[in-house]
Amino acid sequence: MVNASAVLSQSSLFTQAWANVYNLISSNITNPIPEVNKFIYKREPDVKAMDFGGYPLIIIFPVSIDIGDRSVSYTSGYTKLECNIELRSSDRLNGKHNGRGAEYLDLLSDSLIDLFNDVSNQNQLRQYLMARPKIEVIDTSIIDAYSERIFVRRFRVTFDTRIVISS
Image (cartoon, rainbow, N blue to C red):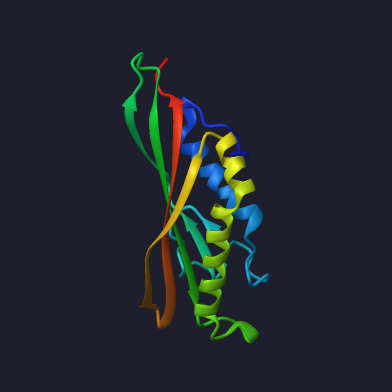
């Protein structure tokens, strides 16, 4: 179960930061193939499992945190949050979607970039203490797995925050 979006706290940095990113993506990016049920994952899905929903998909990996310099009183510090997001799409899709893997990867990539560059989303994230989101493409590749061509694009999203880090 995913937490509701909320302000980061010292006791929930990892959990809440991930939930805020998940909720932003899940409420704003739709699957170009509406027949696919599960679309967003926290880890790489088991593509051979019977309940695998298929492509395209989004993987939001767990958040990493770098606590930087602390204040003189050691009660707050600049903290950088980093979240890696991976998009995958396949050319082997059903019906009218067959052969559109690269097209869907680009469509989802554009949506993801627009999402984090949108001023109202940036303001909302700032209210959650996740300021100045910066999104960058790490790499784009094509992998052949299980006789299927998978288009992959990886993003890194970083946020700055000044949060109380000790009591």
